[in-house]
Image 1 (cartoon, helix red, strand yellow):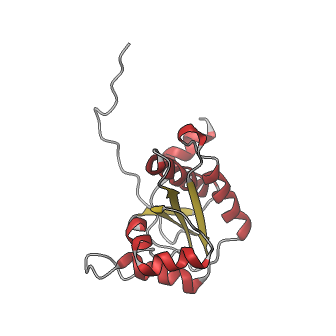
Image 2 (cartoon, rainbow, N blue to C red):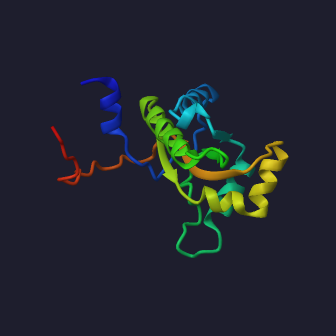
Image 3 (cartoon, rainbow, N blue to C red):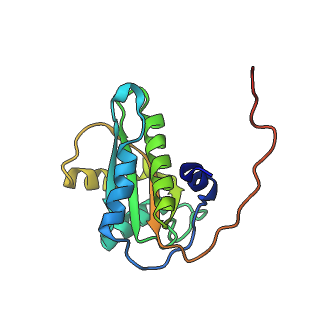
Length: 173
């Protein structure tokens, strides 16, 4: 089977991680895969924050959890790396472009032997004053919206394969 198709079929959401740091070279490869995602009119609206600093990672986790008791104490499941995708809202396709960026990074992590999972609430995190302060500290100006958090690390679990629902593809010939 083609390696890309094999990676797509093997990818699972990992929700338990070892505390082993991910080498910078692997993070860079995942980020690069995200930067090569397709984008509407090639505007390349998404940006990626590669967060491995524990203090910042823990702050993002706290902001992501918010005050809602539904959310876990650590919505990042112990992953040592968080790749935050934000996108410039001036591009009409910014949400789709950011979603493609997330998809590329999830597949890249799988292809490199790492676990990954899309964690929502990046939008809410970066609408908060604390989230805006993180962007300001980085010198990022503009109207960015959080699209998703791609948590990455070495899996401490083996996610089960779940069957695909039937009757979801229709061919018009």
